[in-house]
Length: 166
Image 1 (tube, rainbow, N blue to C red):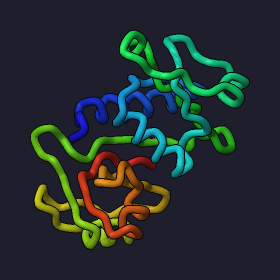
Image 2 (cartoon, one colour):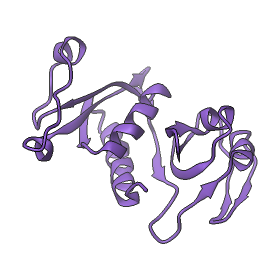
Image 3 (spheres, rainbow, N blue to C red):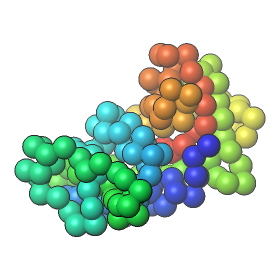
């Protein structure tokens, strides 16, 4: 099970970095943060996802070099460097907030995810989840990894509701 607090920290950091108009930002390098970052990259919120040390890599390094291998000796110093995107001067990522909380984990099956994806409210064991609005994505932790809600519905998978991003 993912650490919900790490996800909440990552969401607030990304939202703040986007509002500050940063081109590149970093988050803690964990397996779950990497899975969420790659899912957000597939959804179009990031231009690049790269694992490196505590100092930011150049764009040339990100495009040509392989990411550093994580070993037991360097795991504490690795960071995930994320390239933020902007369209016509506005950030692509405006809001990012965690759905599940440590005190209330929100899970949904693929039928409920289908309702949420279509913009309808859905009842889940954790409570009612409002439907997605235009341009909003919901990321779900499934047995096949972290997927966007529409991907999870297409694969008929449910799981833990991680975060909403718009």
